[in-house]
Length: 159
Image 1 (tube, one colour):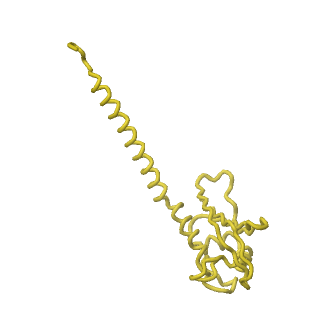
Image 2 (tube, rainbow, N blue to C red):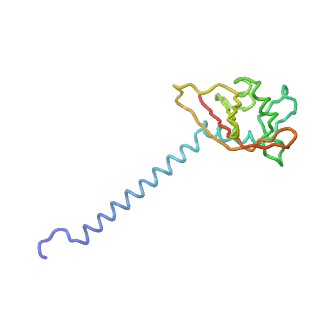
Image 3 (spheres, rainbow, N blue to C red):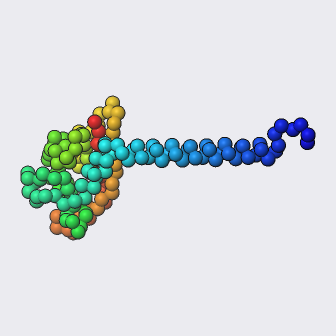
């Protein structure tokens, strides 16, 4: 029609353009926040320490352990129950030292069979602002290898 300022096609095209722009900005924001989370030093240390839990310790003597590791061996990544008993005897300063992190750490291993818990370190305080929590599932085997059970390993890293 003569004198019509906007055609129906122009209105639809502008609506599609605005929807595409909103979708692109939403995607960019989610990727940016994921990359910021990945680049956070606290998060990287939490992932590194949680991976260290499934490596074998450097010594079978509980008093001489200098690196954190709960696995039976490099080939068998099941958690050794004697190592759980060992780490329970240590304190938060020991855990911070063997983890090789400037941050405080707390580990709680909970049996899914009977609910028993093994803890090392100090729980994050309620007012802590920077806390990263990671939960891993593990198969725990006793020293003779005749009994295996599932457990959750909760790792908290905080400033």
